[in-house]
Image (cartoon, rainbow, N blue to C red):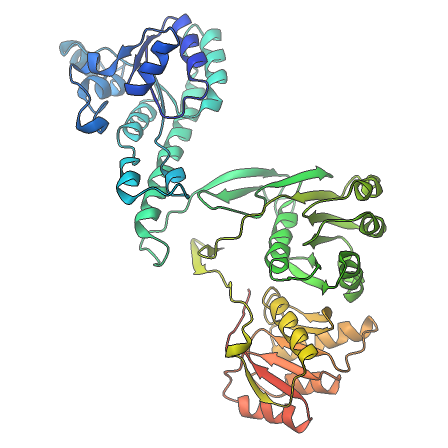
Length: 511
Protein backbone atom coordinates (compact mmCIF):
# COMPACT_ATOMS: atom_id res chain seq x y z
CA UNK A 1 0.00 0.00 0.00
CA UNK A 2 1.26 3.47 -0.86
CA UNK A 3 0.24 6.88 0.39
CA UNK A 4 1.22 10.11 -1.33
CA UNK A 5 1.40 13.08 1.04
CA UNK A 6 1.93 16.69 -0.04
CA UNK A 7 0.57 19.28 2.38
CA UNK A 8 1.04 22.99 3.02
CA UNK A 9 -0.85 22.91 6.35
CA UNK A 10 1.10 20.42 8.43
CA UNK A 11 -1.36 20.32 11.33
CA UNK A 12 -1.61 16.71 12.53
CA UNK A 13 0.69 15.57 9.72
CA UNK A 14 3.21 13.57 11.74
CA UNK A 15 0.60 11.69 13.78
CA UNK A 16 -1.36 10.81 10.64
CA UNK A 17 1.70 9.74 8.66
CA UNK A 18 3.02 7.65 11.55
CA UNK A 19 -0.36 5.94 11.78
CA UNK A 20 -0.22 5.13 8.06
CA UNK A 21 3.33 3.79 8.40
CA UNK A 22 2.28 1.58 11.32
CA UNK A 23 -0.41 0.12 9.06
CA UNK A 24 2.21 -0.80 6.47
CA UNK A 25 1.81 2.10 4.03
CA UNK A 26 4.84 3.23 2.08
CA UNK A 27 4.95 7.00 2.43
CA UNK A 28 5.71 9.07 -0.68
CA UNK A 29 6.15 12.78 0.00
CA UNK A 30 7.18 15.95 -1.78
CA UNK A 31 9.43 18.83 -0.79
CA UNK A 32 8.78 20.32 2.62
CA UNK A 33 6.39 17.52 3.55
CA UNK A 34 9.13 14.91 3.10
CA UNK A 35 11.51 17.04 5.17
CA UNK A 36 8.99 17.41 7.99
CA UNK A 37 8.42 13.64 8.07
CA UNK A 38 12.14 12.92 8.10
CA UNK A 39 12.65 15.34 10.97
CA UNK A 40 9.98 13.40 12.87
CA UNK A 41 11.90 10.16 12.41
CA UNK A 42 9.90 8.72 9.50
CA UNK A 43 11.44 7.54 6.25
CA UNK A 44 9.34 8.73 3.31
CA UNK A 45 10.21 8.12 -0.31
CA UNK A 46 10.69 11.46 -2.01
CA UNK A 47 8.61 12.20 -5.11
CA UNK A 48 11.73 12.82 -7.21
CA UNK A 49 12.91 9.29 -6.40
CA UNK A 50 9.64 7.97 -7.84
CA UNK A 51 9.66 10.16 -10.95
CA UNK A 52 13.44 10.20 -11.51
CA UNK A 53 13.04 13.93 -12.07
CA UNK A 54 14.10 16.70 -9.68
CA UNK A 55 11.70 19.48 -8.69
CA UNK A 56 11.66 21.99 -11.54
CA UNK A 57 10.98 25.71 -11.97
CA UNK A 58 11.59 26.62 -8.35
CA UNK A 59 9.05 24.06 -7.15
CA UNK A 60 6.35 24.80 -9.70
CA UNK A 61 6.67 21.24 -11.03
CA UNK A 62 6.94 18.42 -8.50
CA UNK A 63 4.16 15.89 -8.77
CA UNK A 64 2.99 16.51 -12.35
CA UNK A 65 4.35 13.26 -13.76
CA UNK A 66 2.90 10.03 -15.25
CA UNK A 67 4.53 7.93 -12.53
CA UNK A 68 2.47 9.83 -9.99
CA UNK A 69 -0.80 10.39 -11.81
CA UNK A 70 -0.95 6.99 -13.49
CA UNK A 71 -0.38 5.42 -10.09
CA UNK A 72 -3.39 7.36 -8.77
CA UNK A 73 -5.71 7.04 -11.78
CA UNK A 74 -5.16 3.37 -12.63
CA UNK A 75 -8.36 1.36 -12.18
CA UNK A 76 -7.52 -1.84 -10.36
CA UNK A 77 -10.45 -3.67 -11.92
CA UNK A 78 -9.61 -2.72 -15.52
CA UNK A 79 -7.03 -5.15 -16.92
CA UNK A 80 -5.75 -2.67 -19.50
CA UNK A 81 -4.97 -0.13 -16.76
CA UNK A 82 -3.19 -2.71 -14.63
CA UNK A 83 -1.18 -3.93 -17.62
CA UNK A 84 -0.21 -0.38 -18.58
CA UNK A 85 1.24 0.57 -15.20
CA UNK A 86 2.98 -2.81 -14.89
CA UNK A 87 4.55 -2.33 -18.32
CA UNK A 88 6.04 0.99 -17.23
CA UNK A 89 6.98 -0.12 -13.75
CA UNK A 90 4.50 2.23 -12.05
CA UNK A 91 3.27 1.29 -8.60
CA UNK A 92 -0.33 2.15 -7.67
CA UNK A 93 -1.07 4.83 -5.05
CA UNK A 94 -3.91 3.95 -2.68
CA UNK A 95 -4.23 7.12 -0.61
CA UNK A 96 -3.60 10.77 -1.47
CA UNK A 97 -3.32 13.35 1.30
CA UNK A 98 -3.04 16.90 -0.03
CA UNK A 99 -3.95 20.38 1.15
CA UNK A 100 -3.41 23.49 -0.91
CA UNK A 101 -1.34 26.65 -0.86
CA UNK A 102 -3.20 29.33 1.16
CA UNK A 103 -4.30 31.48 -1.76
CA UNK A 104 -7.34 32.97 -0.01
CA UNK A 105 -5.34 33.91 3.07
CA UNK A 106 -2.74 35.54 0.82
CA UNK A 107 -5.34 37.74 -0.84
CA UNK A 108 -7.06 38.54 2.46
CA UNK A 109 -4.67 41.16 3.78
CA UNK A 110 -1.13 39.79 4.10
CA UNK A 111 0.24 42.63 1.98
CA UNK A 112 1.82 40.42 -0.67
CA UNK A 113 2.81 41.68 -4.08
CA UNK A 114 0.92 40.34 -7.11
CA UNK A 115 3.86 38.17 -8.19
CA UNK A 116 3.94 36.56 -4.73
CA UNK A 117 0.21 35.88 -4.84
CA UNK A 118 0.55 34.26 -8.27
CA UNK A 119 3.10 31.84 -6.83
CA UNK A 120 0.51 30.76 -4.27
CA UNK A 121 -1.78 29.44 -7.01
CA UNK A 122 -1.46 25.70 -6.46
CA UNK A 123 -1.37 23.60 -9.64
CA UNK A 124 -0.08 20.21 -8.56
CA UNK A 125 -2.21 19.97 -5.40
CA UNK A 126 -5.60 20.34 -7.07
CA UNK A 127 -4.48 17.95 -9.83
CA UNK A 128 -3.59 15.29 -7.28
CA UNK A 129 -6.85 15.74 -5.41
CA UNK A 130 -8.98 15.63 -8.53
CA UNK A 131 -7.20 12.51 -9.78
CA UNK A 132 -7.68 10.73 -6.46
CA UNK A 133 -11.29 11.81 -6.17
CA UNK A 134 -12.03 10.74 -9.74
CA UNK A 135 -10.67 7.27 -8.96
CA UNK A 136 -12.39 7.07 -5.59
CA UNK A 137 -13.44 3.49 -6.31
CA UNK A 138 -9.84 2.59 -5.53
CA UNK A 139 -8.16 5.64 -3.95
CA UNK A 140 -8.85 7.58 -0.74
CA UNK A 141 -8.57 11.36 -1.20
CA UNK A 142 -7.96 13.41 1.96
CA UNK A 143 -7.64 17.20 1.96
CA UNK A 144 -8.55 18.31 5.50
CA UNK A 145 -6.63 17.65 8.74
CA UNK A 146 -9.93 17.22 10.57
CA UNK A 147 -10.50 14.00 8.60
CA UNK A 148 -7.23 12.36 9.64
CA UNK A 149 -8.44 10.68 12.83
CA UNK A 150 -11.60 9.28 11.23
CA UNK A 151 -9.69 7.88 8.25
CA UNK A 152 -6.99 6.32 10.45
CA UNK A 153 -9.63 4.70 12.66
CA UNK A 154 -11.35 3.17 9.65
CA UNK A 155 -8.07 1.99 8.12
CA UNK A 156 -7.23 0.22 11.38
CA UNK A 157 -10.67 -1.32 11.59
CA UNK A 158 -10.68 -2.51 7.96
CA UNK A 159 -7.09 -3.75 7.69
CA UNK A 160 -5.72 -0.82 5.70
CA UNK A 161 -8.77 -0.05 3.58
CA UNK A 162 -11.53 2.53 3.68
CA UNK A 163 -15.13 1.78 2.78
CA UNK A 164 -16.58 2.74 -0.62
CA UNK A 165 -18.96 5.10 1.19
CA UNK A 166 -16.08 6.90 2.92
CA UNK A 167 -14.09 7.21 -0.29
CA UNK A 168 -17.09 8.64 -2.11
CA UNK A 169 -17.77 11.15 0.67
CA UNK A 170 -14.14 12.24 0.76
CA UNK A 171 -14.15 12.55 -3.03
CA UNK A 172 -17.09 14.94 -2.75
CA UNK A 173 -15.16 16.99 -0.18
CA UNK A 174 -12.09 17.06 -2.44
CA UNK A 175 -14.01 18.30 -5.46
CA UNK A 176 -15.73 20.95 -3.32
CA UNK A 177 -12.33 22.10 -2.02
CA UNK A 178 -10.78 22.38 -5.48
CA UNK A 179 -13.89 24.10 -6.86
CA UNK A 180 -13.80 26.66 -4.03
CA UNK A 181 -10.08 27.15 -4.57
CA UNK A 182 -10.51 27.87 -8.27
CA UNK A 183 -13.43 30.14 -7.43
CA UNK A 184 -11.25 32.21 -5.10
CA UNK A 185 -8.59 32.57 -7.79
CA UNK A 186 -11.20 33.54 -10.37
CA UNK A 187 -12.66 36.20 -8.05
CA UNK A 188 -9.20 37.64 -7.40
CA UNK A 189 -8.53 37.98 -11.12
CA UNK A 190 -11.96 39.52 -11.72
CA UNK A 191 -11.60 42.09 -8.95
CA UNK A 192 -14.56 43.76 -7.24
CA UNK A 193 -15.66 46.39 -9.73
CA UNK A 194 -17.31 44.38 -12.47
CA UNK A 195 -20.22 41.96 -12.83
CA UNK A 196 -18.41 38.95 -14.33
CA UNK A 197 -19.87 36.74 -17.04
CA UNK A 198 -19.56 33.73 -14.73
CA UNK A 199 -20.12 34.30 -11.03
CA UNK A 200 -18.73 31.64 -8.68
CA UNK A 201 -18.99 32.58 -5.00
CA UNK A 202 -18.23 29.91 -2.41
CA UNK A 203 -20.07 29.34 0.86
CA UNK A 204 -19.14 27.12 3.81
CA UNK A 205 -21.71 25.74 6.21
CA UNK A 206 -21.40 27.67 9.44
CA UNK A 207 -24.51 26.51 11.28
CA UNK A 208 -27.00 23.69 11.04
CA UNK A 209 -30.57 24.95 11.45
CA UNK A 210 -33.52 22.92 12.69
CA UNK A 211 -35.60 23.89 9.67
CA UNK A 212 -36.26 26.74 7.28
CA UNK A 213 -38.93 29.41 7.30
CA UNK A 214 -41.41 26.57 7.85
CA UNK A 215 -40.96 23.13 9.47
CA UNK A 216 -41.21 21.29 6.14
CA UNK A 217 -38.13 23.10 4.78
CA UNK A 218 -34.58 21.93 5.49
CA UNK A 219 -32.08 24.71 6.22
CA UNK A 220 -28.53 25.69 7.17
CA UNK A 221 -26.58 28.93 7.37
CA UNK A 222 -23.60 29.27 5.02
CA UNK A 223 -20.96 31.97 5.32
CA UNK A 224 -19.34 33.28 2.17
CA UNK A 225 -15.73 32.19 1.79
CA UNK A 226 -13.20 35.02 1.86
CA UNK A 227 -15.45 37.63 3.50
CA UNK A 228 -13.95 39.48 6.44
CA UNK A 229 -17.21 39.49 8.37
CA UNK A 230 -20.64 37.94 8.20
CA UNK A 231 -23.82 37.97 10.26
CA UNK A 232 -22.46 35.45 12.79
CA UNK A 233 -18.73 36.16 12.60
CA UNK A 234 -17.17 36.34 16.06
CA UNK A 235 -20.58 35.89 17.64
CA UNK A 236 -20.77 33.71 20.73
CA UNK A 237 -24.06 32.22 21.87
CA UNK A 238 -24.16 32.50 25.65
CA UNK A 239 -27.54 30.90 26.25
CA UNK A 240 -30.78 29.76 24.71
CA UNK A 241 -32.06 27.44 22.03
CA UNK A 242 -30.32 26.91 18.68
CA UNK A 243 -30.78 29.69 16.16
CA UNK A 244 -33.46 29.26 13.51
CA UNK A 245 -33.60 30.33 9.86
CA UNK A 246 -35.89 33.23 10.72
CA UNK A 247 -33.68 34.28 13.65
CA UNK A 248 -30.64 34.63 11.40
CA UNK A 249 -32.62 36.44 8.70
CA UNK A 250 -34.04 38.93 11.21
CA UNK A 251 -30.65 39.36 12.84
CA UNK A 252 -29.12 40.36 9.51
CA UNK A 253 -31.68 43.15 9.14
CA UNK A 254 -31.02 44.34 12.68
CA UNK A 255 -27.25 44.30 12.30
CA UNK A 256 -27.31 46.24 9.03
CA UNK A 257 -29.50 48.92 10.58
CA UNK A 258 -27.77 49.20 13.97
CA UNK A 259 -24.42 49.87 12.26
CA UNK A 260 -25.88 53.17 11.00
CA UNK A 261 -26.79 54.45 14.48
CA UNK A 262 -24.02 56.38 16.23
CA UNK A 263 -25.79 57.02 19.54
CA UNK A 264 -26.72 54.24 21.96
CA UNK A 265 -29.38 52.47 19.93
CA UNK A 266 -31.82 49.61 19.87
CA UNK A 267 -33.42 47.91 16.86
CA UNK A 268 -36.27 45.45 17.29
CA UNK A 269 -36.93 43.29 14.23
CA UNK A 270 -39.96 41.15 13.46
CA UNK A 271 -40.34 39.16 10.24
CA UNK A 272 -37.29 40.84 8.63
CA UNK A 273 -38.63 44.37 9.26
CA UNK A 274 -37.72 46.79 12.04
CA UNK A 275 -40.81 47.42 14.16
CA UNK A 276 -39.20 49.66 16.77
CA UNK A 277 -36.00 51.70 16.52
CA UNK A 278 -34.70 54.33 18.91
CA UNK A 279 -31.58 56.15 20.01
CA UNK A 280 -30.95 57.83 23.37
CA UNK A 281 -28.19 58.99 25.67
CA UNK A 282 -28.40 55.70 27.61
CA UNK A 283 -28.87 52.23 26.18
CA UNK A 284 -31.62 51.49 28.72
CA UNK A 285 -33.63 54.44 27.39
CA UNK A 286 -32.99 53.42 23.80
CA UNK A 287 -34.54 50.00 24.52
CA UNK A 288 -37.50 51.50 26.38
CA UNK A 289 -38.24 53.86 23.48
CA UNK A 290 -37.80 51.17 20.80
CA UNK A 291 -40.17 48.88 22.69
CA UNK A 292 -42.69 51.68 23.23
CA UNK A 293 -42.65 52.41 19.49
CA UNK A 294 -44.62 49.22 18.84
CA UNK A 295 -44.80 46.85 21.83
CA UNK A 296 -47.34 44.60 20.14
CA UNK A 297 -45.11 43.84 17.15
CA UNK A 298 -42.02 43.59 19.38
CA UNK A 299 -43.44 40.50 21.10
CA UNK A 300 -41.16 37.61 20.11
CA UNK A 301 -38.80 39.85 18.16
CA UNK A 302 -35.05 39.99 17.63
CA UNK A 303 -33.54 42.77 19.76
CA UNK A 304 -30.23 44.27 18.63
CA UNK A 305 -28.10 46.73 20.62
CA UNK A 306 -24.95 48.68 19.79
CA UNK A 307 -23.92 48.97 23.43
CA UNK A 308 -23.40 46.35 26.15
CA UNK A 309 -26.41 45.16 28.14
CA UNK A 310 -26.25 46.64 31.63
CA UNK A 311 -27.75 45.23 34.82
CA UNK A 312 -30.69 47.65 34.57
CA UNK A 313 -31.28 46.74 30.92
CA UNK A 314 -31.13 43.05 31.80
CA UNK A 315 -33.90 43.59 34.36
CA UNK A 316 -36.01 45.41 31.76
CA UNK A 317 -35.50 42.68 29.19
CA UNK A 318 -36.48 40.02 31.70
CA UNK A 319 -40.09 41.10 31.40
CA UNK A 320 -40.26 40.91 27.60
CA UNK A 321 -40.68 37.85 25.36
CA UNK A 322 -37.66 37.97 23.10
CA UNK A 323 -36.47 35.43 20.53
CA UNK A 324 -32.90 36.72 20.18
CA UNK A 325 -30.78 39.24 22.10
CA UNK A 326 -27.71 40.59 20.33
CA UNK A 327 -25.25 42.99 21.93
CA UNK A 328 -21.52 43.72 22.20
CA UNK A 329 -21.27 42.45 25.78
CA UNK A 330 -23.40 41.64 28.83
CA UNK A 331 -22.99 42.73 32.42
CA UNK A 332 -22.72 39.79 34.83
CA UNK A 333 -25.83 40.98 36.66
CA UNK A 334 -27.66 41.25 33.35
CA UNK A 335 -26.89 37.60 32.66
CA UNK A 336 -28.17 36.70 36.11
CA UNK A 337 -31.39 38.60 35.42
CA UNK A 338 -31.82 36.78 32.11
CA UNK A 339 -30.97 33.36 33.51
CA UNK A 340 -34.63 32.50 33.97
CA UNK A 341 -35.38 32.98 30.26
CA UNK A 342 -33.90 29.67 29.12
CA UNK A 343 -35.31 29.83 25.60
CA UNK A 344 -33.90 33.27 24.73
CA UNK A 345 -30.94 33.06 22.37
CA UNK A 346 -28.37 35.41 23.90
CA UNK A 347 -25.66 36.38 21.41
CA UNK A 348 -22.48 38.18 22.39
CA UNK A 349 -20.97 40.21 19.57
CA UNK A 350 -17.16 40.38 19.71
CA UNK A 351 -16.77 41.42 16.06
CA UNK A 352 -14.91 44.69 15.86
CA UNK A 353 -13.92 44.61 12.19
CA UNK A 354 -15.79 46.93 9.84
CA UNK A 355 -18.10 45.53 7.20
CA UNK A 356 -16.57 45.44 3.74
CA UNK A 357 -18.49 47.84 1.54
CA UNK A 358 -17.53 46.05 -1.67
CA UNK A 359 -19.73 43.14 -0.55
CA UNK A 360 -22.46 42.26 -3.01
CA UNK A 361 -26.06 41.44 -2.23
CA UNK A 362 -27.46 38.15 -3.54
CA UNK A 363 -31.10 37.21 -3.99
CA UNK A 364 -32.10 33.70 -5.00
CA UNK A 365 -34.84 33.54 -7.64
CA UNK A 366 -36.32 30.61 -9.49
CA UNK A 367 -33.45 28.96 -11.33
CA UNK A 368 -31.05 31.85 -10.85
CA UNK A 369 -29.38 34.47 -8.70
CA UNK A 370 -29.82 38.24 -8.68
CA UNK A 371 -26.57 40.03 -7.83
CA UNK A 372 -26.21 43.69 -6.97
CA UNK A 373 -23.98 46.04 -5.02
CA UNK A 374 -25.19 46.47 -1.45
CA UNK A 375 -27.01 49.69 -0.67
CA UNK A 376 -24.41 51.13 1.72
CA UNK A 377 -25.50 54.70 0.96
CA UNK A 378 -25.49 56.91 4.06
CA UNK A 379 -27.37 60.20 4.52
CA UNK A 380 -25.54 63.18 3.08
CA UNK A 381 -27.14 66.57 3.72
CA UNK A 382 -24.93 68.18 1.09
CA UNK A 383 -26.70 66.40 -1.75
CA UNK A 384 -30.19 66.80 -0.28
CA UNK A 385 -32.50 69.57 -1.46
CA UNK A 386 -34.92 71.50 0.73
CA UNK A 387 -37.73 72.22 -1.75
CA UNK A 388 -40.19 73.93 0.57
CA UNK A 389 -40.55 75.12 4.15
CA UNK A 390 -37.87 75.34 6.79
CA UNK A 391 -36.14 72.61 8.77
CA UNK A 392 -34.72 73.28 12.24
CA UNK A 393 -31.62 71.44 13.44
CA UNK A 394 -33.54 69.02 15.66
CA UNK A 395 -35.82 68.18 12.74
CA UNK A 396 -32.78 67.50 10.57
CA UNK A 397 -31.64 64.97 13.15
CA UNK A 398 -35.02 63.26 12.99
CA UNK A 399 -35.08 63.35 9.20
CA UNK A 400 -31.67 61.71 8.96
CA UNK A 401 -32.64 59.15 11.62
CA UNK A 402 -35.85 58.23 9.78
CA UNK A 403 -33.98 58.11 6.47
CA UNK A 404 -31.51 55.61 7.92
CA UNK A 405 -34.33 53.42 9.22
CA UNK A 406 -36.51 53.44 6.10
CA UNK A 407 -33.67 51.96 4.04
CA UNK A 408 -34.05 48.73 6.03
CA UNK A 409 -37.84 48.46 5.78
CA UNK A 410 -39.48 46.35 3.08
CA UNK A 411 -40.84 48.44 0.20
CA UNK A 412 -43.13 50.24 -0.14
CA UNK A 413 -41.80 51.71 3.10
CA UNK A 414 -42.81 54.64 5.28
CA UNK A 415 -41.25 55.57 8.64
CA UNK A 416 -42.69 58.13 11.06
CA UNK A 417 -40.31 59.38 13.75
CA UNK A 418 -39.69 62.06 16.34
CA UNK A 419 -36.79 62.73 18.72
CA UNK A 420 -34.86 59.62 17.65
CA UNK A 421 -37.76 57.19 17.98
CA UNK A 422 -39.89 55.50 15.35
CA UNK A 423 -43.61 56.09 15.90
CA UNK A 424 -45.14 54.14 13.04
CA UNK A 425 -43.75 51.97 10.24
CA UNK A 426 -45.62 51.01 7.09
CA UNK A 427 -43.83 48.08 5.46
CA UNK A 428 -44.26 45.92 2.39
CA UNK A 429 -47.31 47.63 0.94
CA UNK A 430 -48.21 47.50 -2.74
CA UNK A 431 -49.11 51.19 -2.82
CA UNK A 432 -47.33 54.08 -1.14
CA UNK A 433 -50.50 55.72 0.11
CA UNK A 434 -51.41 52.46 1.86
CA UNK A 435 -47.97 52.40 3.46
CA UNK A 436 -48.59 55.92 4.80
CA UNK A 437 -52.04 54.99 6.08
CA UNK A 438 -50.64 51.90 7.80
CA UNK A 439 -47.85 53.86 9.50
CA UNK A 440 -50.28 56.54 10.67
CA UNK A 441 -52.84 54.02 11.91
CA UNK A 442 -50.23 52.03 13.82
CA UNK A 443 -48.88 55.18 15.45
CA UNK A 444 -52.34 56.35 16.47
CA UNK A 445 -53.39 52.93 17.75
CA UNK A 446 -50.38 52.99 20.07
CA UNK A 447 -51.16 56.49 21.33
CA UNK A 448 -48.30 58.30 19.58
CA UNK A 449 -48.86 62.00 18.93
CA UNK A 450 -47.77 62.74 15.36
CA UNK A 451 -47.83 66.53 15.60
CA UNK A 452 -44.36 67.73 14.65
CA UNK A 453 -43.15 64.27 13.61
CA UNK A 454 -41.22 63.56 10.42
CA UNK A 455 -41.90 61.08 7.64
CA UNK A 456 -39.37 59.20 5.51
CA UNK A 457 -40.38 57.45 2.30
CA UNK A 458 -38.00 54.99 0.61
CA UNK A 459 -39.10 56.10 -2.87
CA UNK A 460 -40.97 59.00 -4.48
CA UNK A 461 -44.65 59.74 -4.02
CA UNK A 462 -46.33 59.10 -7.39
CA UNK A 463 -49.31 61.24 -6.35
CA UNK A 464 -50.04 63.82 -3.70
CA UNK A 465 -52.48 61.51 -1.88
CA UNK A 466 -49.80 59.92 0.32
CA UNK A 467 -48.41 63.20 1.61
CA UNK A 468 -51.94 64.54 2.14
CA UNK A 469 -52.67 61.63 4.52
CA UNK A 470 -49.45 62.40 6.36
CA UNK A 471 -50.10 66.13 6.57
CA UNK A 472 -53.61 65.57 7.92
CA UNK A 473 -52.09 63.37 10.64
CA UNK A 474 -49.80 66.18 11.79
CA UNK A 475 -46.54 65.30 10.06
CA UNK A 476 -44.35 68.41 10.00
CA UNK A 477 -41.52 67.46 7.62
CA UNK A 478 -41.16 64.86 4.89
CA UNK A 479 -38.00 63.37 3.41
CA UNK A 480 -38.21 61.40 0.17
CA UNK A 481 -36.11 60.78 -2.96
CA UNK A 482 -38.23 62.71 -5.45
CA UNK A 483 -38.22 61.87 -9.13
CA UNK A 484 -41.94 61.50 -9.80
CA UNK A 485 -43.58 63.10 -12.84
CA UNK A 486 -45.88 64.73 -10.31
CA UNK A 487 -43.20 66.04 -7.96
CA UNK A 488 -44.57 69.56 -8.44
CA UNK A 489 -48.03 68.46 -7.23
CA UNK A 490 -46.52 66.66 -4.24
CA UNK A 491 -44.35 69.63 -3.27
CA UNK A 492 -47.26 72.06 -3.74
CA UNK A 493 -49.39 69.99 -1.33
CA UNK A 494 -46.69 70.26 1.33
CA UNK A 495 -46.04 73.95 0.65
CA UNK A 496 -49.76 74.77 0.81
CA UNK A 497 -49.95 73.12 4.24
CA UNK A 498 -47.04 75.26 5.46
CA UNK A 499 -44.84 72.22 6.03
CA UNK A 500 -41.37 71.26 4.80
CA UNK A 501 -40.06 68.69 2.33
CA UNK A 502 -36.55 67.46 1.59
CA UNK A 503 -35.58 65.56 -1.57
CA UNK A 504 -32.63 63.17 -1.17
CA UNK A 505 -32.28 62.24 -4.86
CA UNK A 506 -31.52 58.71 -3.64
CA UNK A 507 -33.94 55.78 -3.54
CA UNK A 508 -33.82 52.95 -1.01
CA UNK A 509 -36.03 50.11 -2.25
CA UNK A 510 -35.68 46.89 -0.27
CA UNK A 511 -37.68 43.93 -1.53
